[in-house]
Amino acid sequence: MNSLTESRWLPIVLLTCSNVFMTFAWYGHLKHKSAPLWLVILASWGIAFFEYVLMVPANRWGNSVYTAPQLKIMQEVITLVVFCAFAVFYLNVTIRWNHLAAFGCILAAVAFVFLPGGVPKTPSPTAVQHAKVAP
Image (tube, rainbow, N blue to C red; front, top):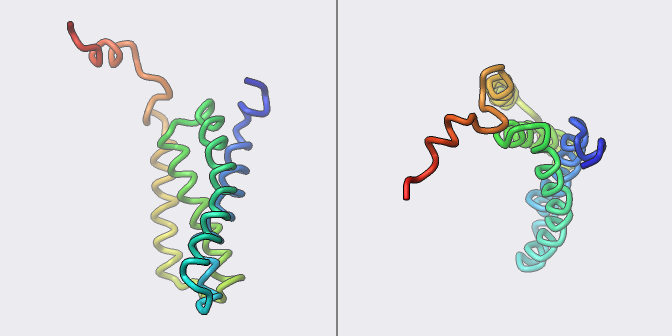
């Protein structure tokens, strides 16, 4: 791997961009309720393709510097940030105090997953020995 794919920031940028596509694929049609459902589904699939083009490398390369649980919880926070911006600016939704409180709970989850002594990046030799099955 090179320094770009081992960057701590590249997965975050890719996850953010993929979540923009995901949010439009999942919720963009809410402004176009008169469109036929079959057309909305096809359009959403087309948009979601670009989400996957960014999400898969984000997780593959991100796993060189983050654990899978860390990547997942980062993705959830990014999803909420992107969705809140989308809801406010595209759907004209008002974010209320209870939405912010729920978001704070998710941020607490981020803090827990990044605490020292959490999930190890690679299994310990003892864990690998215990996972081996006797013939």
